[in-house]
Image 1 (cartoon, rainbow, N blue to C red):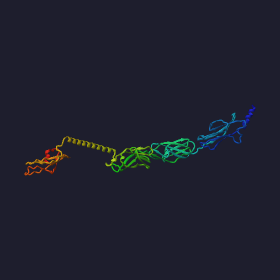
Image 2 (image 1 turned 90 degrees about the vertical axis):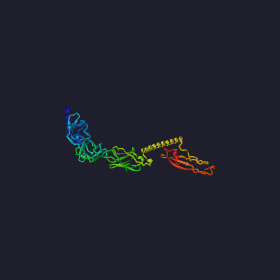
Image 3 (image 1 turned 60 degrees about the horizontal axis):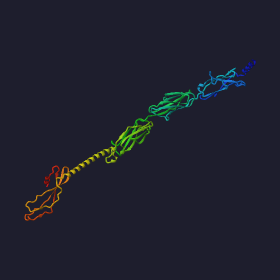
Image 4 (image 1 turned 135 degrees about the horizontal axis):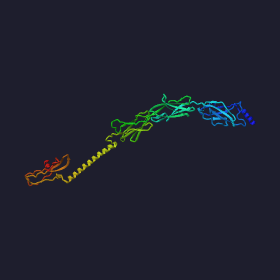
Length: 432
């Protein structure tokens, strides 16, 4: 018993009466780590004696840092934050816990790195968004530690849009794009050392194109083949640049660009094939819009049959067909009338064969007989007839017995106009 008491007194006499705590680095920074070491002054005996084992424990304010009692006199604290600032101290004891020695308190202040080099980015990139779309504003800090509060503002006067606090160097905010035009934005970042501002960023808010209107400008009221017309397409609203495409039906004719907005024109030399429907299309990257259909009818000269539109050709062919049918019916009626005349002989005898007339001695000469024929020349309601007659010489009374033959007969022809509706044999005789 006496021996144990002597050993205890020796141990107490050999234990250090004071500890102190060191911090490395001496000015810890947020995001980095620090190391705590429990030491004894150089004037004091070392803690580790031969045959005696000690344990150590580290404290912050009134809390024990985990793990509690360990065999190592050092403790490493990773990824410091501002919450790690406070009062630290350490304690040491023997394995038998016969005596505990503690250090003095050390005040540790975890230093933050101020936020710096703040910038504002946008998504979609390039600072352009269409009306009605969502714009993403991304606020980025090149450096800074701890929780950072980000704030976004619209316009140079700073109309607030929103804020976020998070332990990162970047944050983003979604805002609806305004109406067409240009808007400006900026953001700030602050981790306790004062806000750091970004520069102003201009955002162009584009306007989708409206439905374009197509107009056809021709020299006259009715364009004709061989003339030139101007197709003009224009959208009332839409951010430039705008691309216009021109169509004949569904066949593309060409395109024109309007880099500063407004409309565009396309010149076209007309042929007969250019009759039909025309339209145009406008597009500024947000989807094309098609105009209403504009019909174009061409006037083609009558002698230019090859260039006649199909509708006119069909009308002419129809008229010609009716005319041809009328001619065929007329010819058929005439032919039928000719056949009827063949069956019914004409009232006038055929052309006579001139005969010699022989007269005997006689006191009374022979009565002249007219001979006539129709020449079948019809003009309106008239028929022209050819009438022949012969003359004979009177013989003298001194030679009554002489038979004289009349020769050298000279027939005479007399033409007469006779109405076909009332012509008779007596009429022909009267014409003599």
